[in-house]
Length: 453
Image 1 (cartoon, rainbow, N blue to C red):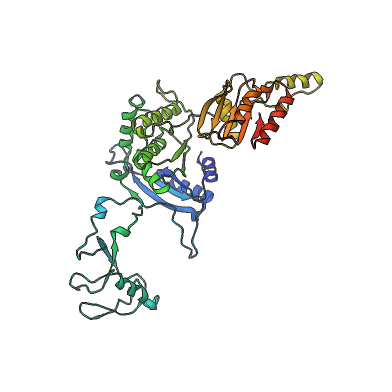
Image 2: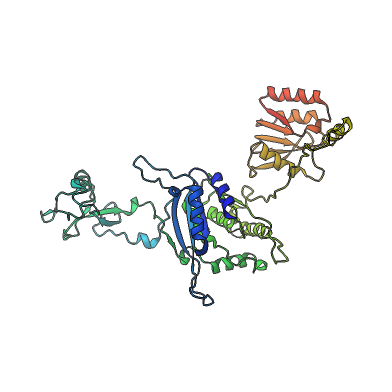
């Protein structure tokens, strides 16, 4: 079940993309084997322990499982010229408790600081250039490092540290060895660790209450939902707010990932996008017969409850179902025994749009085939008394009228801004190829690509 999905996921990831996979003890080893095969061992980022429960369960046989694992891999692990892996994850924002560790006992004009070790774990034999004496400016004494742990900085860097006021000997010079000042103003964030506690990212009981509060009637639909705080931690590490990142969850479930993206965008005024994929698996709930219906309803309510600031016409989501093409396909296996059977098939394709498909159905398929994302901004417009769709602020105009008037297409040419591409149905010309050819030439003269389907 997992292998084909993970294979597709790898192909869909950007080169700097990251995938997080949640798993329990029983399948962790198998998952690591699959991920190493598909992504490569060098693409392994880390294995995170998520504390999913806040108390043990007494109904287990031997051990109460209070944690799950989250395995993280990259699409392509890049390294710098020195062979060090390039960071793919952002640092987390610092907390007030972490900032409180920085003090300013000497009234340093650069602000609060924290001191760090001035030595490293290398020996004098390994780093002879780092084994030298320094002078304590308070006592005048000559200080040598331990031969098993030499200085962290070269002589030249040590001199620069002195000039920048970064060498700390204590308020009265009482330190046996110097320490290095790190200023709070220079700290960019905190690197995440491999243990995520429930008080930081939530637990399964919190997730159930979160879903029950939003959708009381869906209680019992999910046994192990994920809390939005857990997904928001992943979004904090792997995405930015500028709209360049697309989040894909191909096991959407109750829609926690989409809900987390909504909350993340509200928190930092971001523009992250998401795609959720969910099979219409049946449930035991009368109101929501499939899991996909729960996913859809949760996102709808999430926008109203947590995404109020995003309900402005520019944000939202579309629900799409996989279906066959809206256009009739030529039957290659058709028994083409005589002229009458050929004529029959040609007649069937005179009107090649299936009769039960709406303009919106056709529109979405044409968008995909024209290379536009399904989330493209679509605006319904009137042109010369007929109906059309303006895509991406008029970049593409699609007219799906069953009979199109020449004055409609000429009015489209006159639109400002002028569209780059215009698409309409071929049978809308009712077999008048001369009109279609003339209009195509007029479009070409105006710098517009004209196509019919």
